[in-house]
Amino acid sequence: MKESMSAILFPHLTLPNKITAFDNFEQLIENIDNANNMENLGLWAPLVGLFDSEEAEMRRYATWCAGTAVQNNVKAQEAFLATGAVERLVGLAVGDESEGVRRKAIYALSSEVRNFQRGLDEVVRALPKSVVPEGGVDAGDMEVVDRIMERLREDSGRRGGP
Image 1 (cartoon, rainbow, N blue to C red):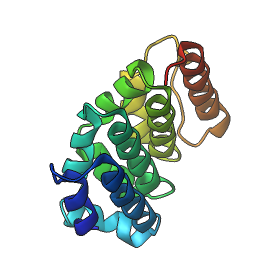
Image 2 (cartoon, rainbow, N blue to C red):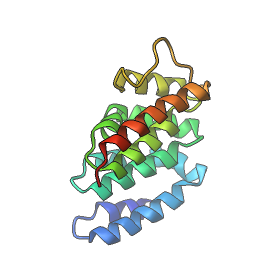
Image 3 (cartoon, rainbow, N blue to C red):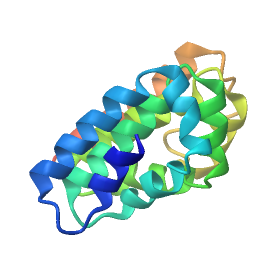
Image 4 (cartoon, rainbow, N blue to C red):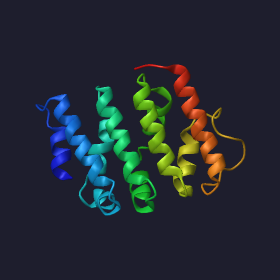
């Protein structure tokens, strides 16, 4: 995992080679034990740092990997929340010019909030009020969480983009 991240961050590597390294990284963190090791290996900070990449494909893969790591994984959800990057992820989900980045950011948000109330509370605070239903939202209420994510997807689709 560290080798993949080193390749992704290496400034002289071509974009296609960085994408290959991202693919390898994403496959590794599909394993819950590997995803849980991201914090110990110091991989969350560089991954989250890539949310700000000038290259849309780098942002897309970074959000995709974040979503994969936290999916059905409370330990990784907590680690991601501790990075303080929820607001940045919401910003990508609602404001990135690339539809591909917005879609993967929404995937990551969806993965972060499912059955994880603290994550949901943080995301709800950062989301536009037009997306969030009035009153509290329970992370265990999949119908409400699904409606929020569907509103984000609909808004993203209306915006279009590459």
